Image (cartoon, rainbow, N blue to C red; front, side):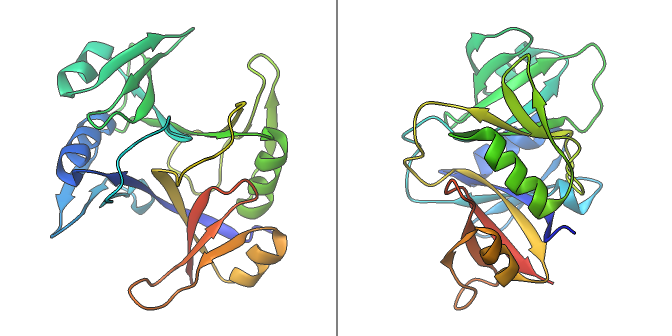
Length: 221
């Protein structure tokens, strides 16, 4: 039985309006501005992406990034993205704040364009299995690319939650993270999550980390 369910995504930003408006157009969502932050919204609550201001600037490659579908890489460049390199079947790009993402050109693209969430990790099999136990779904191995994924991830508004092996260790807080809902935070801790900050004060959620230190927020329902 799953211990949690996907709720939404959160992006750290130097300038929430700039980053929010970029991803709203890139992903086929609407940007809603607040006093200090903003969020993207679509037709389903799970498509929500919070764009939150942080004081620290991007200093390392994103350890969590998104994949998007697009009819044209050039279209994303006109929105403010930059091409880093072309891979086999996709293009590695950066958003207006330098955050990496991958663009997959397709002849036909739906209005909503978020394709996958990708997590760099040391032990992709172990981490994929851990998250599959937490949120449900099945961890699958892609022998052609040497990666693991949960596909589909129950409740998620994208096709794949992907875990990719990388040699470098996690060194800073992720600038993209996901939120979950749960009825039992202690069960997440018993399963191997770490409490980083308990609910209270100015936050209505618990800040946790998975076994490789990836931050996520748990909202108790």
